Length: 431
Image 1: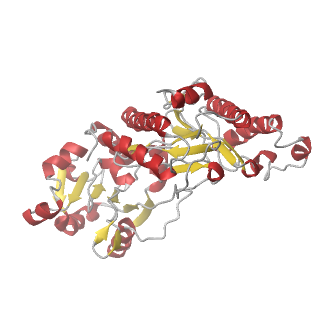
Image 2 (image 1 turned 90 degrees about the horizontal axis):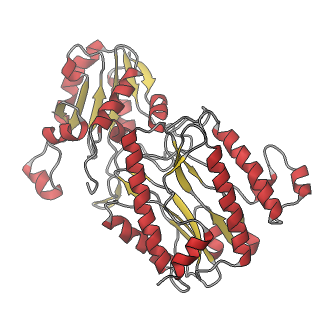
Image 3 (image 1 turned 30 degrees about the horizontal axis):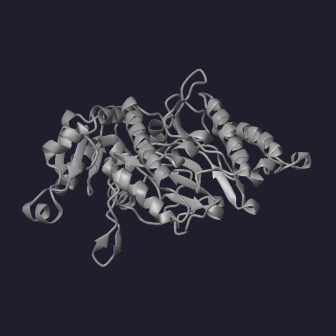
């Protein structure tokens, strides 16, 4: 992998936390993702299943982690099953993990080849009454493909039908949402790479450039800083495109007088960053663009202060909505009658601020976390208000990534990324 080795103590600790939540006499399984075909003999670039990576640090396909904390044989309480390397495989695909290297990455001492899986399981299952299966239960998940994990779950339940089935995901939703210090350092690294990309494009943007050229500048900077890729499909949205929340075509020419909304983040070691900045194509905002920008920036700053332990995700968004309402009044986008006629399900601000304020961030850009439970210290959230005005031909969104801390002092992981109007204009017009 391109990233530097991660201290395996992270994965050892993550497994211990998960096993501490398991029932007595239980066993849990975690599978890697598939290599997904495009057509013919081509596949998409491999992306590891984030749950397996969280618990093991293993970034290789055809891998299985087994956790059996009460096993009488202590060497079988944590097991990795991997593809057995051979000369032909190495010649065509490169080196696969050896047992020694798998231990160095994960801290799992017992490593078997996949061909031994069924034989080992037969003995383990004699000691287990409870079987944990892993499923995707993220509140935004839309899974239409039968994953390797799903096929394994069918197989194991059919093979051992009398076991009590439990779900791993509720445990992981809680554990993955609260970050360890090593994870926070990795997310910070991803944010720092994003900063380098943004500073690069500020020098590049000018009237006449194409959105995809800006995307290419980001990509270049990410790759030379050991990021494999964008953390998500980049949004490079100039002019009227800045009003489209998930615009990913990135195929228009940038025009003098327009703004360009950049929703871009680098990944590092599978951890995501998520930044949005909106800048003037010409290097200078118009008076109206400045007014709207200043309002969005004010809302973002106030929303960050409100992101504290104990608050509910929904309540945070509603409080931010009240601040946004005041700004929309100042901008003349809504009036008092709009507020008088609003309802809980359709507040006045929603006409111009149409999405949520924040989401969890981590191994996934929209990371695990129970949004119905109070926010806790060391969770990482985006803060991303926006105002979208199709009639005026532009929208503005600003977004930072922050660590929730005590005493009203969230840590902004993107504090070094330019965001003030004067600094943006100065950097865009410097030689």
